[in-house]
Length: 140
Image 1 (cartoon, rainbow, N blue to C red):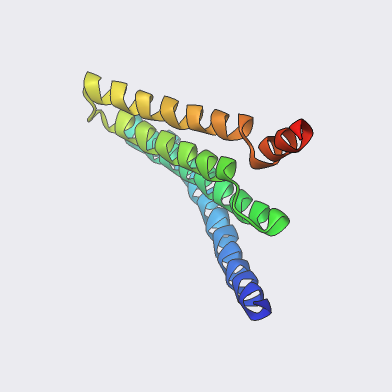
Image 2: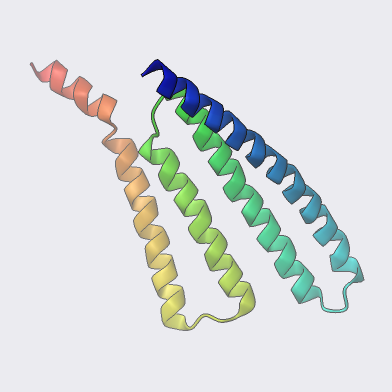
C-alpha cells in the first residue's frame, strides 16, 4: 500500500509539472493571440483564438487545483470534479458560440446542461459527506 501511495504521488507530481509547463505555454499563446488582435485583418478570428486560449487556461488551472486538493485531502472531492466539468463545458460552449455553429435549440441544451451541472455542484456542497455524517452522529 505504501508503494502505491508513493507511485501515485510521483506520477501526479510529474503530471502536475506537465500541467504547469503547459499552463506557461498557454499564457504565452494568450499573449501572442492578444498581440495578433491588433495585426490581423480579421479581428474575429484572432479574438476567437484569444478566447479559446484563455478558456483553456482556466480549465488547466482547475485541473491543477484538483490535483492540489487530491494531495491535501487524499481523495478527489466531487465539488472539484464538477468545477472542472463546468469550466470545460463553458469553454466548449463559448467556442461553438464564436464559430456561429449553434442553433437556438442547441444553445438551450448547452445552457440546460450547464444549469444541471451547477445544480449538481450545489447539491454536492449541501450534502457533503462530512456534514451528513455529523448530522447523523448528532441525532444519536
